[in-house]
Image (tube, rainbow, N blue to C red):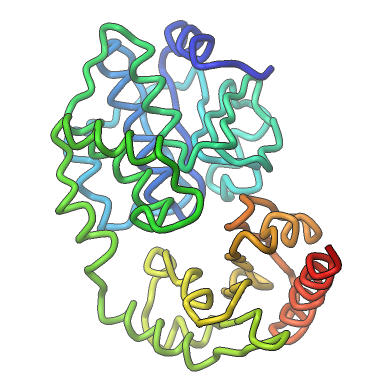
Length: 320
């Protein structure tokens, strides 16, 4: 059932022993939303813990400073920033079909939960979490909650550079400043500091750069061999999807990353072409300017498949 913030708060108030799910290959928004919700629930006297298929990247360790996970048999399951159960990862497959509440901001959300609060116009799931925080009169917007929420809104907007950024997003950030969030530290960790292996994989990815459709589409790829050669972990690839769109004149940026038996495709676009429409044709989804899908094939076939869809969309937009 689709619910609003007030109904969401009422449902959370009735829950206990709650497992909060974050999506695989966690980013700042799913982790920020997950841990912010945990700290909100702790103020309500409720037990909860955050679970993720993958190890939480060290760069987000500041979100765990007040985190004391407890062991309990879960009575309720909440998913944050997860549009589809396919994004749970194999370690969390046991929760498929059992999610009581989903809090999200993806228009492509599959409505797999018993109840869902999905706000498509929110730049990040953490914008929705902020409203939930204010929905409980007895909950204080503490520094750690502010750090979590700021992490989500800043990372999902590329530090407020992407087109999903709104005046409301800036207002949320301002309220987190007032609550004492350490935005200088958070911005440095997420947008300035890079490991040597991250720099190495960026260099290798840029060496694969291809331009298509008269320079309107740029493509880079990362193979399994490149990951092994550089020693880059999956958690270090966050943000690489934005690189192809940095080329002047490019409307659609494609990043193909090896995973399992195929390639995860990240699509970034301007307002001219709908990234979610591209990925939707291949079983994926996301937002208008940022979306993803998975193609189970070898590299050349994956490139051919995604480029064909992009070409059709560009041609369709030109016809308008």
